[in-house]
Image (cartoon, rainbow, N blue to C red; front, side, top):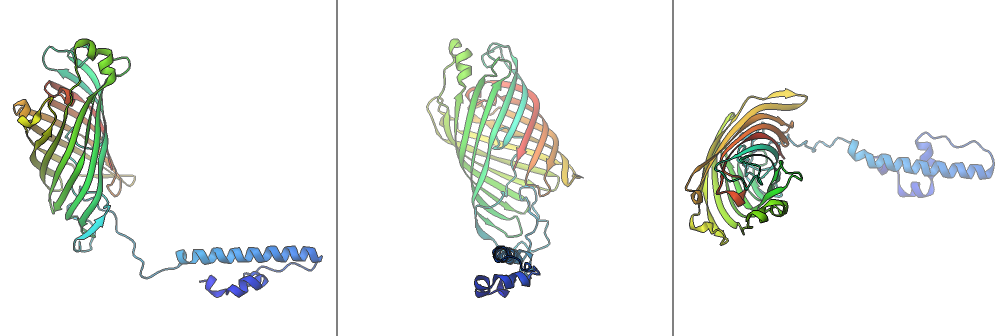
Length: 361
């Protein structure tokens, strides 16, 4: 290293020698004051130049022990790592990157970022939810959420293992047929989850709190005048899912229980819920170092509180993924049939069709 060749005595006592060492000529003999100024400037410049080169030397040097980390493997979508290295034994990891369980594509209650436009057709004669606009109205649905890894037991170059995370999400719905796009309802979910993977098999266990709140604009502009009362809809759910997948298909299923609930309504009296579905992923093609593919999914859910009626959610469209697969955006057509996806009104039924923009990190 260059700094190693220059002793501290040289730097402090002989700056002119450093200047000569770097090929900087001394000033021609002129006035004493000018010589002192040039000599002083040249010495300082030499010291600074030597210091900069000495600092940069480690970055420019080739360390034979330095190892470039392998490309990131998104274990949510790759059960078999793309690296040729052995997966290695499991290791405890704080704040692990990514996850080992793939989010459900078609579940409208999956924690993620999305924005929907939906045409909602209510079943029955009530136009309460549409704020007097009939059985058909236009709705914007947005979600902001995701999960954050706390600890994992993961393979250095593989995907098998488990992970403990926290997740949270808020779902909000807005009536686009009102002058101020009134907020109808917001649902908040938060809690811990444990995810695991073993080859093509993966699973998820969650214990989470959900609370739902009617929008102030909905209540003030229409609801209070027409007898709508805000419910204390708050409960805790324990649920679990198991998934098996291959390169182009995935099947999943599971269920859960409402273990704690408020009194209005008390969902512990009929606590059961089940969920199942499938997903398909087409072959990918490259576009400017990114990857495009067609994807589709279907999710079905039944809740004991609504007499086990099946709620259907289906979507499909185009996925655009980053080179390492970490960031994904999707433009999807979506269809829902069953309970209204606004929790304060889940005893009502509707049929919805629209467009969804999903973001996944």
